[in-house]
Length: 222
Image 1: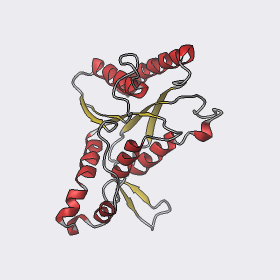
Image 2: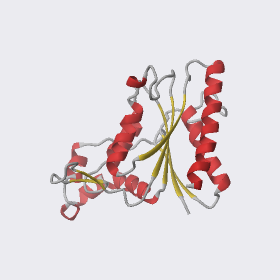
Image 3: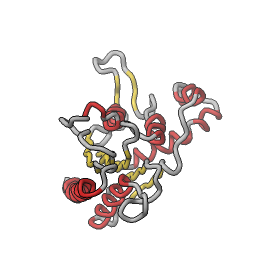
Image 4: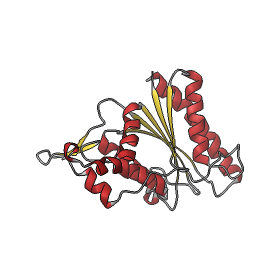
């Protein structure tokens, strides 16, 4: 059985095509999970809506607790790290991470940045060994977890080779931290032209939905 971790980061509560002013990225994640479960209804889905309920920001207390060896932590330190522990546990339980995220000002929404900051934790999801040429040691590489990054942007040309590729701070801001932890396989699908509307947007949505259906089949076959 496969476990999906479904994360929505959009501030918009609804889905485009269903709700007025709904989120495109939520539409994509819903389409992916629905297609997946249509073929594999027995699989589990863990859902976390960080757009509606953002994780807490990293604080000085969080840093002090995170850099204290687990056996030496005081009770308050365990309390400070409780949310981080829960978020990391969800990743450990999952086989496929499905992350829906809109591009805000060329980067990610603040709730997703907080989620990343909570899961990138020394001694829990990565270690540091100065004797190695690459000192970073991933601790979530015990099995091949796949990440599906489903995004939306107002314009276009942010993909590899695109005229605005250098402005895409969203994709590397997500994939680089995940790779550090051992989650290096990422599949991306995006809706473009969200601010253009009309035919350009309609065609982008149709292409993204079709790509998601093909991707579900590919991942399930693998």
